[in-house]
Length: 402
Image 1 (cartoon, rainbow, N blue to C red):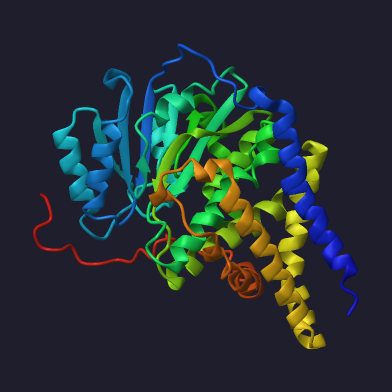
Image 2: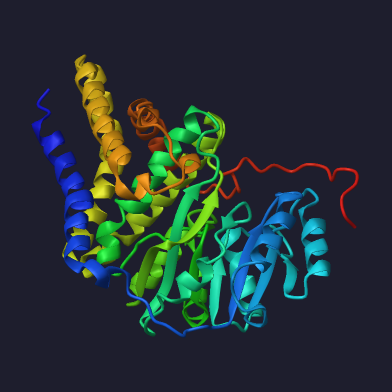
């Protein structure tokens, strides 16, 4: 089997995502993370909620305690018809804090429509999306709004850390995976003020832009079938598509819990695979309007996503899977060393760091994810479940707040 074209293609993808991005961040230097002083807009933190139980109360308490003027900050929780006691805990928080309110969707609508519901009800200048299981660093809001340097900047995302990095081998692996996803794979996009996917864990949006895009966001579908997953990627792509700038700053931090078992991990990866397939395929028609380097990245990632499962199968059929496995081990080993020696990692407190050898199992998980989840995602694009954390309906436990 002639593998030269395959590895050449992978090298081009690697060069574009890592080397060109790093080069542009060095060239732009201090202009990469520009800020404006004195900007203190009204903020509405929107928390989409589904089956989080007692933890939603703790999340709300942490949000109302953030370092921002209380008269300019409100927290809006949107319950998407939870089947546990989440709504009651959210209502308890609203009773305890004046700047907290709780909305309840009339039926299970999905995360994006829930957020749209809150945006319509809000009068704040900035909408900050925060996932219901996320802990936000106290200064994060100030860091986010400081990056809105002009009306052309429509969204600013923050840096997501793993809150349970050393729970087990899988959370350690994801800690390093998050590091590369946040601090390397987005370098090219950050340098061009066109980050194509800002995480729902912590992102600030101009409300006027969200209202402008509301009809598109509300009617997202594939052949008439509503799509509820991949909302963050879809929204960010639409913002860029409409000519606005999107940014990301490492100084606005939040913490999310990594999937602690393989079932939860693969559920998450499957949802992300679906999102990537839908976004890349639908966006092909307008990819040429992006910066040439971004266009190359966009199209090459789609090609890699669709072709790589066949590459793995071809190696298996040809009986030279060992060569491909060796390639994965060498690649992952090299990335592990980059993580280990990175200044930004060494600056973290010990509890947020993991040993670099923890990333080696990715040499197995990565091809498995491509081989199994890509075709599965392709054939289940009509899924509409909140499956990332394995939410399922459950009876309300005794002792829930009334």
